[in-house]
Structures are given as C-alpha cells and as structure tokens.
Length: 447
Image 1 (tube, rainbow, N blue to C red):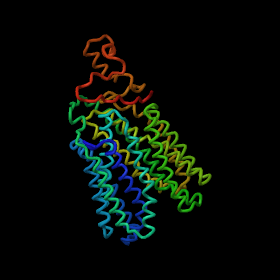
Image 2: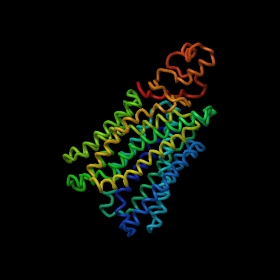
Image 3: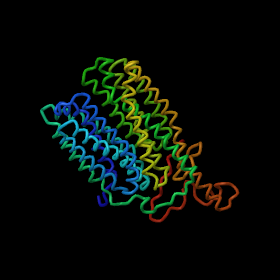
Image 4: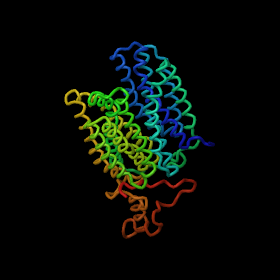
C-alpha cells in the first residue's frame, strides 16, 4: 500500500486493542498469583485504568486535530509499550504504574480510532464505523479462550503479554498514513455563532449520554453475565463464560450486518431498533428461564446494540465541521465512557439489595432510553453547520437546509431555498471544490 492507512490501518489497531483486553481478563488471576496480590491491592491497581483513560480521552481530541493521521499509530505504539510495562511489573505498585500507561493509551486509542474513522469516511464517502468496530469484540471473544489455552500447559503471563505487545506494535504499522486529513488540506474557517456552538454542545452531550446508556448495558453483561448464569441457573464455569462471549459474538455479527445493510435503513432507525432489541434481549436473559434462553438473550442484546454507538459516532463525524471533528468525537466518546465506568459499582450496589436478576431486568429498561435517544440525532447539525437538523431529519437526496437558506438569501430569491433548488440538480450538495472528494450527506435521520 503506497500511502499506508486504508481500512486495514483502522481494523488492525481495533483488532489488537480487543486482543489485549480479551486476553487481559483471562490473565488477571494469574498475574494476581504471580505478584502475590490480595484483593485490595489488585483492585487499586486495576482502578488505575479508568483514572488515566478519562483525561487521556479529553486530551486526544486536540492532539488528533494537531497530528491528524499520525495520532492513531502513535497511541497504538504507546499502548504496546504499556503492555510491555505490565509484563515487567514485579509488584502491586509497578503494576499500577504500568496500568496507568495502559489506561491512558487505551483511552487515546478509542478517540484516535474514532476520529480517524470519521475523517476517512469524510474523505471517501464510505461507511466504515461498523466494519471497524466489529473487529474489537470478535478479537475479544477469540483472545480469552486462546490465552486460557496458553496458560494451561504452563506459559507465563509475562510471555503472553510480550507476545500481545508485539502484535499490537505490528498493528500500528498499517495505521501509518502519509496522506493528510481533508481539513488539513483545505481548512474551512468556522462561521458558527455562540448560540450555534451552544446547540452543538448540547447535541453532542445528549448523543454521548445515549452512547453511555448503551455502554452501561454492555458492561453489565460483560461483568455480571457469567455470574448471573452461575448463580441464577447453576451453570458451570464454561457455560457461565459463554454469556459474555455470546454477547460479544452478537456485537460482531450485528455490526457486520449494519455495515452490509445499515445505509438502507438510516441512522435513526438503527438506533431505535437497537434499543428495542437490546432491551428485549436483556429482559430475556434476566428472566433466566433456562441456560439456552439466557444465552440467546445475551446474543440478541449484542446484535441489537451493536450498531448504536458506531452510528452515533459516524453521525457526529458527518455533522461537525472538519476542524472540530476530532474534538467532537473526543467529547462524545468520553461522555459515553462514563456509562461503561458507572455500570460495575451501580449494578453491584443494586444487586446486593434487589438481586442480580432483578437488576438485569432494570438495566433492560435502558433499552427504552436508547429508543427515545434515537431522536437525539436531530440535535446534531444537518451537515457541517451550526443549524440543527430539521424535524423530519435529513435525506441524501435533499440539500442541507442551512446551506439552501443561505444560498437563497444571497441570490435574493423570494422563497428560502428556491434559488438553490432551481440552480442545482436534485441531490446536489453544492459545487465540488477541485481536488477534493464530495463529502457524503448525513444518512437520513429518517428515510
């Protein structure tokens, strides 16, 4: 590949990121034993990950705006260095220090990967988010049993971590891209008013909150799904572990399905249907009628919720002006991550009082929040403007209303948008600048 980058440059870091976190879950007990840590020491060390991840997410937006396509390979290489630091840790304190680096690099990868994917969509017009994000849960599903098999004959956690670090470092190579992002080639000065900035900020926060609701549901399954199967249905260790695995497999399948057919459905419909299926799946799992029905519920929840966060991120990337895209993606990602962090203590506290099955049923109701949140896409600008999308949504065959209004005012037309409508063929978004690809319209919030 002459310039580097491409889809492989996105999928490779997404896969290696999932490879580490999938394998890490299986390595924790071994590392605890090798370092002779008690539960308190291990808990404090693990807490270093979210402590470092949140500020790193906020800082990666401005970094990505400055470094552009160099950001993703840089933070992926830092992630590999963090894994090597974990492998070298010889005590609880050195493990915590290494996990600080892991958390910072991991949070940075999330933002850098999302920002790079959004920029690539803007450059090519191709929908990429579901394709890229399908790789992570698939890698996690495969990594956990693979690490378990490697530990069984006596492989050390250090050797496994070094192997993973090498694979992560190698994944940074295809992510190297010599091409510059579109906003760096032809920057467009922002013309937003303070009021438009305020509306945009509100829209991004609401979209991030919807993403956070989805990640709360996701983390509940990942952290408590196996316990629900073991305690509620008496499943053995293997079947219990299949609960989170079924959800992850559903995530991968759902994202690939959305990549294949999602463009025909539209963003709002994907989020709405995702909330319905996610809620129904978790409700079925919470009922705990049998092991099979519970696993089917987790898988259904994964398929349903799979496209929601990628769709929200893709819509954010299309709606925001190029010079603001990385920071907007950073904000939405960080707000969403709050739901992921809040799930373990929230579910644990409620489960102690109400029972885990009841709490899973309550979490299933979050699907209704996601359904209602599908309308949050209307709060985003129609396309790189400060104007909110019209109530009816946007459609690829129509001109962005904000641009049509401005064109009509400039031409002195009697009715807003009439001049633009008469001068351009249907579906046009304005004259294309030489040397720049057409920017895709936001796929209709209602089609």
